[in-house]
Image (cartoon, rainbow, N blue to C red; front, side):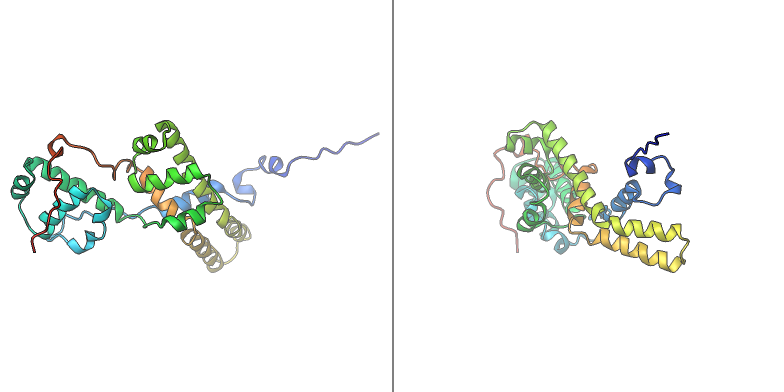
Length: 253
């Protein structure tokens, strides 16, 4: 009697068994570890302390709207009252208060993410992403505003959002791929019931791979933007500021 051998895909055979019974790469667990290790730090409330540390925020003033930077200079460094600033700009005190609050929120966000260099960004992500996707990512880093990017690139906002989230997932996958072999090693040691010290060392190597990944800083930045920080760097035009206060403000020495 003739016999027949059916050759199957190994992944198909593996899928018949539970996660507990098979040794392999658990992408979901690794993905959670990446999110946990590379999540941005908590935002610090810069106005809650007894005194405002102007030197700690000064380096970020060039990345927020100039008008807000001027107000922070005048209010927090030169100690002018909001009513005085309002008269100087010929706007309401409420408008000054809003702009100060908005500027500080922007700086608090910027302090939680790494600073990126465009040349290195293109060098490291160039081989992995299309020109359009890299441009969307960089513009998102600069503005965090999907609608503004759509306007600048002549795209729909839906496409910008789709490509941004797709690129974010790809960055996460690149980090996971780098750490894949170390994750398998950890699973193998646990499966073989090796000593806790041996497992702990392997897990430390895995965490180190994630934290030191060349793509780690990009994941931190774009995950932070995706996590309820859209538009945080986008300047909202207020009627109170229209055609007012455009002259350069010279801080009081």
